[in-house]
Image (cartoon, rainbow, N blue to C red; front, side):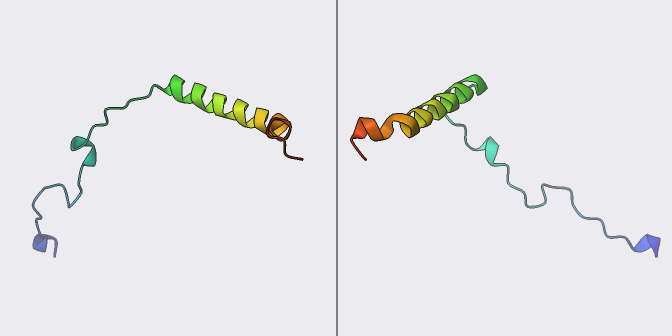
Amino acid sequence: MAQERVSMPSGMGGLVRYFDEYKSKIKFKPGHVIVLSLVVVVIMLFLYSYGNRLLGIR
């Protein structure tokens, strides 16, 4: 029974490698992403604390 094995051709197996086809022109360093997220958090905290007074909402 060991002699009846089927040999398949080698290949990609239907997988597509998308990263070879497209490269983004916009690149961010990890430090920039961290700083941007910290700025957003600070703005959100500021608006949560003082937004009602700034916008005149009671």
